[in-house]
Length: 324
Image (cartoon, rainbow, N blue to C red):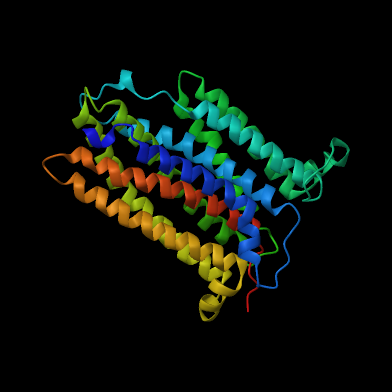
């Protein structure tokens, strides 16, 4: 039981995570583009930051909806002692980030310096503008749902955010854009449920550690079984998306010689670390004694997933590789 008490080590890990996540939009674009010969688009750092906040908000709220549903499936679970939801705060943060991204679209994909730079008509006249407005309004509705008697209804506006992101990532000029959007839709949905769901499950485990430790472990076990399928879907869609952007004969070169490839490689390596931590947590769950010790690698897993979210945001801001 002592393994899940507050500790200096955990606090230090959280501080490191926050620091690294903050540095990714600040230094990430320059590091990724260094020596590639690719031009850095204006406002890349801001776009990375805002999209990182948007992705994190999506993960937190969708994960709570998903994990709370798992908790209700555990017999004898003290549902009246579920952790206080962060969904409302996450939704408002997502709405603010979506507004920031909409402002950039309204200024011709440039970071506005003053209100006069904004052309609101561009939000209604362009595809990217309309998608940006969908995201703003969807997060607004999700925030209202989070405060309602049925917070699970927020799944609908959150789904709208994911669809808008999937369409935005694959413009009509791309080859087979609907295929790309479909892959991104599955990838982003599974990623949000994996990262956000684990965060809330660990909060449940901590909240129930004294009075209902076995029920908490049961929730983690249910999550672990679903997470296996989520990981498989993320891997499959990630590979397919990579091969669409980088033909097989050029993958090795582009992973080191393009900004997109470098960020993607960093993300893949980090996901591999997440996979190892997940396997370790599942192995501890199978023990008959001290199953609560699975919390420790699972905590490392959710911290690493936070960095994956930040890298995913950077991946949307760097230039898409040219098909050779």
